[in-house]
Image (cartoon, rainbow over the protein chains, first blue to last red):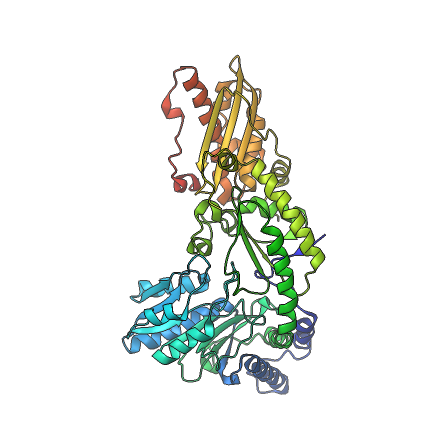
Length: 395
Length: 145
């Protein structure tokens, strides 16, 4: 069996997304900035895609900027809010401890430039409350940036409530919705979102293309200079095939959002129920407010990379937050943020599902994962110490 | 190209000498859980020769493969020869490791040395302490290899 259960990393492009792209590879290949017909046809496709994305998010087309992906959108949103803040002497930024590195590293850079960054703790469940945000906002706060859903542990955050708090206090609110777009309902006006980042390849669109929603009235700062594209806010010839394909993928995902959520969460719950039976294991992330496709576990006594390699040999593609899979010394900052000690965080497994996965696949995973965990535990000196009582179990 | 060589994958999926030895003559454990790798090596020594060796490892694929390869290399060696096995030789025998995985081979070398040191201590055999680097839990230094 060959099972792809790493949809939070990236997804397979849908037929809809592939077909939407095809005419713009060889047929309508003009540059939308060109005056001739070939260019203007591309410009029309660009405008139509912008309208589609705006419709999916509940905003107007001119509030959409196309980018190279979620990371660029996050960078631009945060830097723009910081620049606006500095003009009014507001240099305090609120975020959370378990954001994606596209957010955290941008904040780190701003910290070096004199901004004060406050990362809200996310507790053992991996979530925050709007009250935490309200309590943290100060007169000099220029930005609140909080992810819609966490990429590793699947927690879905109370974005609308946080948006309402920010609106009331007059603070710009950005959300990294890379894991949410196409999977959870978004309406930027109703949810009081000022800026939102998304990435096409997380909802069966192509890689290397994303979008930033920016409410009218917020001044963007360029990350890429050199042209009048995207109202002068993002230079570079537009990736027309990618943008058109992303719009088609997002529309498709939003049209099927409820039925997909029902199907995928049933698969997710089967996995959670099955894997919970492994001794000394624990589900990571919010058990109730959770992405339909996210399953994240820690298994005590084993290391994640070896788990992934053995699962791969059984045809199961998954992911882990262990240090060895990241190439760094520390395991995932997300798992550390929810209070998992290093030794437990090393033994993490993320399975992320989509609507093409089947219940048979879930049954197979539930059958195979415990075998691999047992196999690795049997050769682990750490597990032996735990079993023999030389060290206390954490999970 | 895959992350690991065929030899690494072979030793990872069919590790040699996994397990423990009852009443071993020497045991060495290096690394720590925080770091994400622990290696434990058990030695049986007869007439100055490593007659049997087993390992237990908590760690990634290359940590398990390095343990397996190191134990295979030292089995049947005299203690002196085993002490001369370097992490580089383990890496070469594995057909190479990715740069950020080289520390796994260092752990394997240190685990062997630590087990021999334990054998010396148990038998009151004198040795040059500088020959036996101590893993003080300083993961950084090991990962800088």
